[in-house]
Image 1 (cartoon, each protein chain N blue to C red):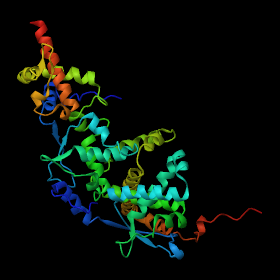
Image 2: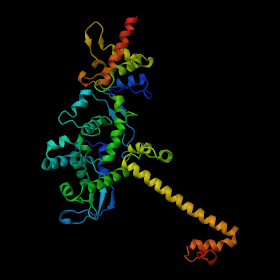
Image 3: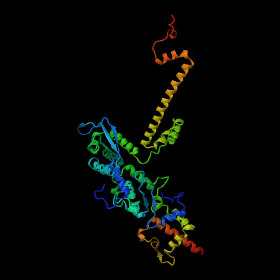
Image 4: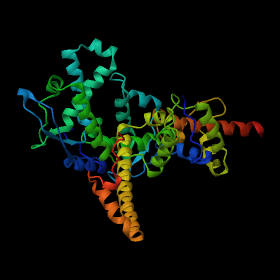
Length: 235
Length: 193
């Protein structure tokens, strides 16, 4: 972000500034998240981070490491910087659900103190999901791709090939695939239930005398008909 | 891995014409989804200019990519960004789209790989071969002859700046590759006379 505006602003720069004004917010309920004074955080609104926020997150990560870990340690293990940076990005992206002008958590340091790494991981996943949802680039997942992977999984499910195929997919794409398959499964189940009803109806027309018995068995009565009762054990 | 010249979309003669453009080679960018009406282009850089972008900071691929995007993205005759801070308000996904539009993917390199070969990251021998084929193409013969005049065949040195109308220090690696290809073609023609 520049305070001093350049004399000439390109159309691209103006388009970027215009989009920055109305970044969409996605609401997510949370449970088990606490802020300072053990104040519960019951939800957050998440928005796509900007480049400035990403740069700032890296700065904040290095400050946090300098204060708490030591820069020499971070040089030994790049994950230390990555974890701290992820927390800072999440801090920027997660906004107060009632007042999105303010962050949901007071600072990245508070998040480090009050949240487990798993809780931060959940927030990272939510932020990445929002990024993908509002990305100008569509997910590289088409129904055709999904069909071919489903076929591979069905035919070679006992091998490690499906695992290898899916290993290269980003988490958001796997989630999209799961959602698409879940929607298909629910649709197919609905269609199957409708077909079963239709079969029962046709059977009732074809065999009117069998219908009452069928109805009774569908009703799931615990009473046993006298002629179907097991004979008493022979003395 | 040194990058070879683009194959299918860029026949040798077209690649040669692209790299002798003045003051610098430039290619239009595909419209961006977040700014579809803005017409952008990618302008060639010298290899040293690419590296100088991060001379003042610790090596960091992300920062290098951001500064390179700022350096090569043009809107008309002006840079689209005045400095890397101009990227600040950009949504991260939008930046990813712009970066992909410029750099492309491994399978499909973007315009930067066409308009801005450098001696550092390009396979200069393969580029030289393609550009010699382009320089000797009939459609480019006049340009090749003009470029050949920048070479003093009596041993007086080379002045490609005479053709490009810019100081030598402003010529991109790609322009120098194209000039050398033209010089080689003229040299071969003189030998066979």
